[in-house]
Length: 131
Image 1 (cartoon, one colour):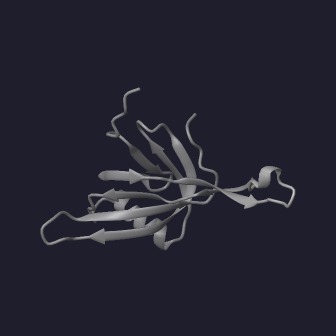
Image 2: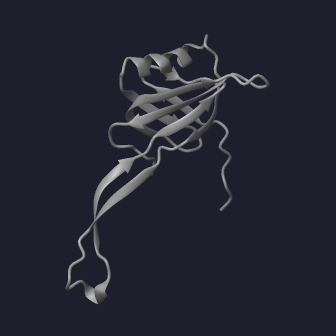
């Protein structure tokens, strides 16, 4: 099967709106914690584990930062007000959705480059992944 182009990915917050000038998106990563339940009578002396908690990593993305952009200001407001909102990651990845907090906003202004910012969102609930 051929790969898919990533162009056209969108990120929208229920309050913040569709974030403009997104240049890259990563995550949210998902992982499963396991607990060791190995006993002296485990078959063949192999380790045994059971699944416990599904954990969500952070969603991170970069933007061409524009301090006048309403959605960029909304990200900072969401962070400083400690307000969770429903986020939807759409486009070629399908529709991922979750409730989450903006937990990081780091602008950069290199002398020979563009204004940019890196943003992180931490899910607080189940991450709904397209089937």
